[in-house]
Image (cartoon, rainbow, N blue to C red; front, side):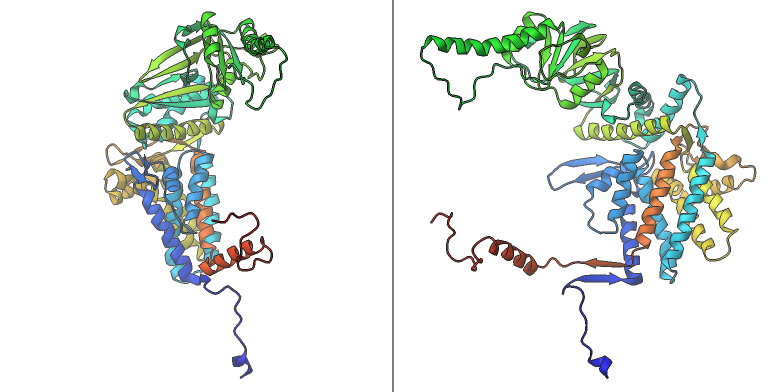
Length: 563
């Protein structure tokens, strides 16, 4: 009786939404599956593109998983995890963003029937983690190193990795052309880890084939004053002076007050202003530099002054471009024109200003440091060039990773099928329920070749059966077989040069397993109410604290005007 009389204890604020238990977990899995289904069709060389129209009226056409995930305004808390793993894959290795979302979605899909049958999610998580570490060890075992090759061999191998990445993008038709361009750009920056040392400039017009690589720096002609056209536009082996100084005639500030006792003194003050600017310009000329770039404005007086002395100048150069010129030419950005010594001047073999489409570009080539490169992209529509830039970013990341971690694996679903076969075999040696869980993990890995077939319009069941049979051969000769996108059959991916760095697959499996385990480990979601009354109370208390006692906002405060 006493138990019935006890009052109910309320811990959470009224209106708090809590959902827990198995239905909650299944609901989270469903949400993640829906997100994975969104990017599913973008996988592979025959993947479709998504056109995303945002609230500001911008349209983006892309089949890059990370870009799509960022632009999808996902509000479901569990599904946001998939957005995070796509972003992490993009920042870590650059490619495989669609793969990682697909794998995570598939792992959860395979776990769903077990959860519905009452299996504890911790058992699934434990098995998934074991399967993940087994899969990663197997990838390391199957990976082929490209170390010890000559530079030419290495270049062709890296170009194949870049071509595999680009094959699934909008510019896939020109993958060889862009692949070699990307490899040259990455090799040009050497061991420099700063990605911004590779500049990508977009110029609408022309065809993709009109794109070109500058072994140095290229940037758009900056805003210029009269006298600019009289300056020479081509130099061989010029000295380059980089400044962070304004070369303009500076009038005194409006609030400056100068008292004169004699009107003739006024002229000396005006002369002083002119002398200051002429002194700066003389020092620039005496430095021996033939090209002067500044982050700040170079005025009309300075432009004409330099033109008369056969010196090229450009003001308002962006910070990024100035830093790249400094890295390439070996110059140092100066904040003063006093004491400009030879050591701070940069140099290059050739400087010229050329017309690219509708724009004029300043190009520095044959730079001594050579730790920078610029890709000038051409193409029809702006959206197309934007997507080409995203594709090249992925390819650049992949080539950098392949240079650092010089191991590659067969693409086209070959490595996924081989790991799947290996895990199925391993599962048979395990007694207990985890045999089923590892088997379902192995089945989930088959989503990659299956989706490649679906996206290309082939019969996925037929192709997967052929792949399973090939990979099951005891001799191990079928380990490198994957989907052949061109014929709709199967082919040796390695022999067809469909390669990807091992680090992409390792990272994708790691991230996808972590995300799946994270979603499976959540059994309750608590959503705090943001009721209007609570917000109103908070606002009232904040306002009330300012006035004297906040007497319900009566009377006008001391600073308020009567209306």
